[in-house]
Length: 158
Length: 158
DNA sequence: TGACATTTGTTGCATTTGCAACGATACCAG
DNA sequence: CTGGTATCGTTGCAAATGCAACAAATGTCA
Image (cartoon, rainbow over all chains, first blue to last red; front, side):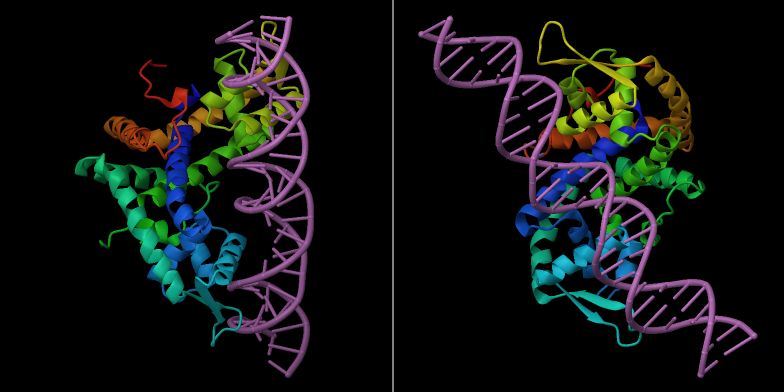
């Protein structure tokens, strides 16, 4: 039965959550999931290149490139050539981008809390453990896509 | 941090698994995920309409329609008009479709087992519980997409 | 230095996607 | 019956997607 097939079940849950979440940043900010990921990443890593974003947020290079372009046009992001390496771009949030993110991050986090609130602390911990174990299966599978750097097991808190 | 944001983490895991799995049915059969889902569903429900598939496998109607069309061209699926209701289609696997499915289902199931094998029985049960709880949060959220019928908590075994 | 390989970001392009609109059929109230 | 409504499957179309090719810049090694 398809409904009991694990990959399918995870895909369905994932898509349902993603679509619900996209209403939050989509309605408030009119941005796509790719743009959302880029902005959230930039909030942490102030100045990064396209490749660094690509490596960190699970989006292929063209998608990052176009997301950055759209965000730049929208005035939410600034991209300037790196001084040291002319190939690299130095991408960062503008004031306006920071302001926008400050508006959509709280409701997004609130929705995450709402999801987590349905789980006991033990279940939350177990979920992390389980997802990590599933990732590890694919880490040993040469046919699976490699995991992006930042998605490796997190230990630092906050 | 994006890497600790639950919706993102689930999306990344889901996509990684889906892409890996698509290598199995894509390489062997040259079919897309939508076509894969349709075929697996047909293996269970012998004769169904487009809408029933749409309701059961989390694909919008156009996608089901096109998936069925491609599968029909490929000779894997037969669609005949329903006798009772001229609007409905009666869609079913052909012999060839059944044969193909018989070839790709085992390795797909094997990969699922490989994933599940990384989890203890308790973890497997916990994962189901957790996913169900997350679904339930969205079941009470009018802004979330409704859950498709067949994705409701399963109890019947096999 | 200079030829060659690598890396970076962008662009092209065919395919897929999501959503709305559509024609066709069935249902339903009067 | 008959006009209006709902349902079914398909199609149109704009946008997103994935992948490969590309130019520009850097690195490498003789």
